[in-house]
Image 1 (cartoon, rainbow, N blue to C red):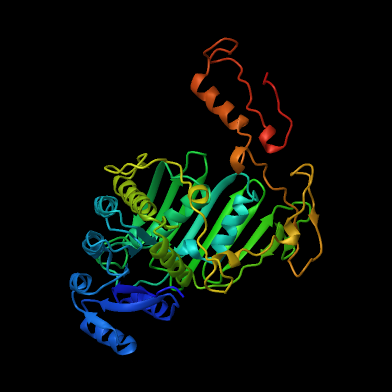
Image 2 (cartoon, rainbow, N blue to C red):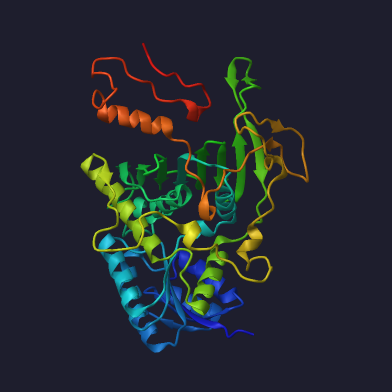
Length: 461
């Protein structure tokens, strides 16, 4: 039997108490010590777990023998606590956001590289079983091209958060998630913010993200909505994924305009062919702790590592810059002062999904991967000519047949046919120049519409 890992916890706020529960109940970890500036919170945790309590997190790091540390302190305290742990060679799991600023995030990662210590960031939504299942289906080609991703994260105002605004505190979840779905980092962002309740920072953000592939991301985060909402919609060539983070419900919808419906006898609507994707429910925070345990035992790169956290902070701050300057902000190829190997976000190719070898629920994330939904696993000669196969099979909800995307070398998806898009762009840039082209005021060639399933018109008279 493997030796249990001694884990320390810094921060006993709302998220810290959740970590306290998970660490204490995990079969592979022992809660060794807790630390918080709030004496009452420390006393309550010590009474519940019978571990050592500290008012000073740095004292806990110096005095207690630890295999790993979970940092769930206020955002502005992350950098000092993380650096103290890293200097002593202790791997850290830092709650998102990694830091409040890009410079602080870079300092954490630079120290981790210097001391060869792993840094994991608590982007807990990436461990949501519905998210993992959607990621598996995306890699299987259910959406060969992602057109747009929309995310909403809203809820009541949390009076406990005073050091940062909603963009850095909540928006980092969504900028990371949108980048993960599209498979790359944004190159340009824009945002509008508002400050209604918070005394010092924004509490509402509408953000736009433009990706190199042409995909668009939209995020709506606020602390003004009276009820908690966590949802995501991904639209692509073959259909649309809809995901609810809270209920862990995942659906796939394919367009069907052949069966219009009437609302009230006068409003036409199209409901599409909807399939419920089976998902095994699991607490994401427990799955995140499973991954931290794996990192502590193997020393491997975390599924959500420090570089992911750095990018999330950088994009969130770029949104704030765009809002303050009232103009789009260009995301650097890499945050200033930090070098990495590849700008493209290769979470699915360079890092495997977290998991363990056993099949016990709650410890093996691979068990979250339900079998393909029978209502959506059909194959047709022409993706646009395939029809919905009505009826239920093995308890699955009725849906439409989807042809998985063709794979190129090394199992990568082939790029979609972007002939029309590229042709339009080249015409707009080089109009009236080059052999065989019409003058600027003359007729223009129309972009090919083959990508949209229609016959192409060669020219325009």
